[in-house]
Length: 615
Image 1 (spheres, rainbow, N blue to C red):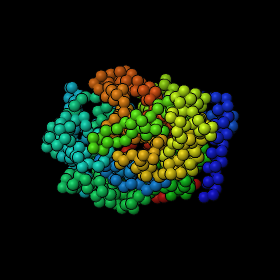
Image 2 (cartoon, rainbow, N blue to C red):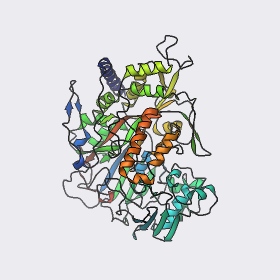
Image 3 (cartoon, helix red, strand yellow):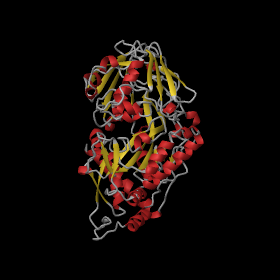
Image 4 (cartoon, rainbow, N blue to C red):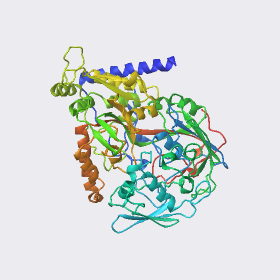
């Protein structure tokens, strides 16, 4: 323990030295190019690793493949161990219709799935458990579930199950975060309001065929705008909707229709799966899969000892010293994710399911928010903490969606002198000479900062941002004087609809969907708009981005470029780092990939020997 803390302090000290040097010469660097995707053949090559003057190497995600090299022959059956990297237990809401946290998704993906899959360009295909056809006007979709798609208890997955999922998401007692995902359906508003007993826009044609008519034909429908997750009506149909998310059928004995079945669960710690012989793509090659939670601080040791075959996320800050790990192959891709700093600007109106923006909030002055963005050097953070495998964010559409990420928008470059001038001009001045600025009324200004715990660099990273803001005269303190683990952090920020008034600023991260549409995170009627910011131009542009006009890709680009510029100007949140995903996979593993559109599925994973290869 002492050694780890000491290492963190040394790393933090080194970073501060670097940042002081950068501030002295007022150096700014451009973010990395945004035109890299998931497929290795589409990625422009750079000369990497690069050497800095300090001798530290910078790596590029462009030099990784997202498909593992197969070496050796598969054995019959075998087991596979998956490390869920987290410093906290997974919550255990194990149903796609109810989960909220990413750790639960990692558990879900092994035993359940949606009806539709998508290609490398994030467009739905007909290769999933259901196929689809669209009407001439693009509003009506006819889905056909394949004949051999069955729940793990042997019951067929039906069109009624798909309809039932929509009915539950629209129910007034539904307590999950997905209600907004089904609003664009004819008759849904009336059903939600209780003025209709059925959803007029959904028709069960027969056991295997479902028709859904949407209010608007939008480009988002075929890139993530369809709710594809059924809910087993024969299991949950007689259950009160308010009781489903906490039921044993969700928490202890979940059922899906994916390649593996849940065998045993140690709540929050591990899950054992067995093969689903009846899986619609074909029986898995593996007999069993074990998922277990691994603390970020022991990921390397677990891989080296062969305790796991792969992990959900490898700390990219640890990649350089482990790049030559002999018993694994590192896969990589540009991640559909970004880190960000958010400012609390209001509260959530649970009754009306809308954001209540407060123009008098402590963080309401956009000049204060913009100055705080200019005060931090995210390029230095990406280089020194993540060795180039994370890099400065500029807009809120990440380069994982290169068609719509505006690479010409520079965001707010690191410029502490500009930050100081902005604060002065906005009336945030140091009245009493203590080195910290008061608010515009001359009162003490102390901002509370919520940040998540994690690996060894979580603390020094949080302290860097606090120190950077202090350098421009702003007093920021950690919420409760400490970091908070994943679940409690998001509870405080507002995941349950209750916004902790003690939080002024928070450091979060979003994994974005396959659809570029950002309204699910920043719309004025969505729970995940944790900053609680509302703005007419924001609503207008988000609506325009999924309108019929947006079928014209160039028009949609223009709309989202305008939206990205608006968010840079208003700064309800600002991106800190874009991310790469680096995943080590044991050399005994065959048929493994990360990312989308590879055409490889979990039932195909195989191994060449009984136990993982140790270093």
